[in-house]
Amino acid sequence: MSKMKSQYVCQNCGAVSSRWAGQCTSCGEWNTITEEIVTTGSRGSKSRIPQMTYTDLSGTSPDEPRVKTGMHEFDRVLGGGIVQGSAVLIGGDPGIGKSTILLQASASLARNGVTCAYVSGEESIRQIQMRAKRLGLDNSRVKLASVNNARMVANDLACPNAPSVMVIDSIQTMCVPELEGAAGTVAQIRASVAEIIQAAKQNDVAVFLVGHVTKEGAIAGPKLVEHAVDCVLYFEGERSHQYRILRSTKNRFGATDEIGVFEMSDRGLAEVANPSQIFLSDRQEDIAGSVVFPGIEGTRPILVEIQALVSPTSYGSPRRTVVGWDSGRLAMILAVLEARLGISFGMHDVYLNVVGGFRITEPAADLAVATALMSSISGTPIPSDTVVFGEIGLGGEVRPVGQTEQRLKEAAKLGFGNAYLPRFVRSGKGAANPIAKSVSVNLISELAPLFADDLRQFSGDEAKRPRAVRSA
Image (cartoon, rainbow, N blue to C red; front, top):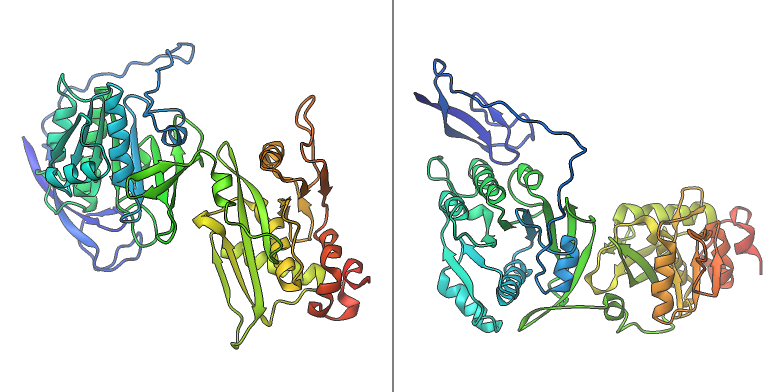
């Protein structure tokens, strides 16, 4: 006979304790612990537990064909398409386009003969139909439902006529009636995810779970949700920009850190086939502080513009404002330029921006950022057909980065003829540098002669300056 038992769960981190406390001992948050009722089996009853069966690694399993959505950017982020029986979690800020892209993907799948269901716990069926009509998708044969009962969703996944792909918008609105607590609590999210994913994998149905995010940008709820799913996707973008970036941070069936680029319009999200041209389309030539950086996102090279603005400060302490890059890494680059080249930024505000709402996470952008800073403070523009990349160490050395050939090939394809880069090592037989005018940079001081005459007034004591700066 089953028993009812109370336990106390932190709604912030999911820690479980046997008694209530004002402060969670795991995360330190106050007033986040609530009582939950769980059902346990009696001590005297011993149910028969089946034994596990094992196999070895010598067995082979056939490669399951992936289901193409018809949206090439979406398929790229998933690793080539949808894997049947997989669970995909997609998160992002409110209004960024999560529901829109999943509705478009469902409609595209339905047009290709794949049975799809769109289950919403936030909107009514009428609201979904109105959005589909605005996007021109009202003729697609997508099944719609408006429920927030996770047990009903799991039962539908186990039916003989279950759809091949199901979208659940959102997982924070789902609840299990047997559990106490409102939808969105840690216990409800944990139980709903467990039931839905188990039913999906047992019946070979691919599910997409929409997740709300917190003010810090993480998906709301316990980390168990991200551990339980096969893929975690984040939809990024600035409200002021029309471009949206779908980024993969976890993928059991493909590469992580893969991205897909979309453009938001009144007809929904349109794919951007060549993001480099889009990000560089409005670039002005001969502007001091503007540098083109060839980055790598997953398996794709993307060229973006990095802009730096160094201006005299009018406050007691100079400002450091960064958009699209790590502020801590900017502080490191400023320290290296001051210590190794004698360039003083102490009386200047520094603003750094990655154009187009793009976010760079790789250290290969160090050299491009340093070049943009030197160009801005000296007022000397970099030639418009030049790309710059490389990682900078604390000693001022420029270290090699990965996938150099792919970066240079993308730059050459878009008409760039000059490059400043670390020592280039050919990775294969016959591989060559596609950009003829390339300059290998071993130390950051080797870039100083480009701005030597203009950097003189911003350098410190003459004795502390490196030769490249104090030479005429």
